[in-house]
Image: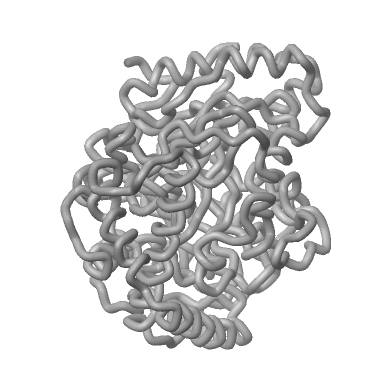
Length: 481
């Protein structure tokens, strides 16, 4: 299969070709591997290519799932596949191997996906860019001097460049939506509890972290959620089941929605005119499609929330460093952790239980206030990030900073996303805008708790009105070197 043909299809489309016997899973694996070879030397999106294992998986036979035979990449963080190293982007945990699949990995396999490799991620996901010391920076296929975002930056860059149509990612403060925005792809963060984190953990980041994918098309995201959602035995909580498959929702109109537009960040950080323009253009498109758009935003104490998130993130960094370092017999320290991660680990160790409980109390207060806002509004529309794709090196994790300073600095670039990790609501970044420099700028739509269905209906409508999947960056598998 030629790369030109391969890259025209999304994952649902490739699986349909396999079902019709127009292409074999082996051909798809070899084509995807050639795509990696073509563009990855410039991008550094894929850090581990497992072509031989993928071909062996195909030879042994695949489940007849909805993605039967489609090559797939997993992010090098949180998820794990039996016998496959999981570095978590860190020198401390490099080479960590689990003897079993995580629940999500098992569901990916049952869906018929073929694991081809792992994608780059910042250390422990502790950054909004993908530039770990361990594996080096991932570059944005729209401009190699810029970041594809983080922490699912390797996956987003791989999807944008045509290596695979969909790739795994996760999101603890925007880590699906940020790289989706910076890389010009679609990224939806599901509701808390929609996709199981079992069996090794019940929750991550005190409920802030979730799992899903980045994709070129809305239907791939919806079909993937159909294949992976639902609780495992012993999960601490789970989202109410949908009334019908998410893939069906993409084909249905959302009706007339009441959409709140907010151009400004609650924290008061400046928002680039390009990002404001992206949100305003999206609002106009929504009005053209028949929706009601009003200017409004939830009210909460952004300073208290940022301080609370710092404590929660620091405690999580400590837990990851100590638990996984202990599993490998390694002692966390500045020689094997990046400067900002090590500072967060030290803060996590110094936190009092009462301080963490106070942070979770702030989470509750904010969630109640934001939930009340969504009683009157179906969707909130904001920029996804505050600036266009930033250059590599801007978010340098090796520059020593105290945790409060580090997280304040990072959230100055991404002030819109983490709110919905706190509240647990679904939110998506939709690639509707490119600036004058040809860089993608996504817009964020957030919905009510457990209401991904409305977001998928709206996303399908937006995709039909302003198709984006055919836009190709300068570094793409179909372009000459």
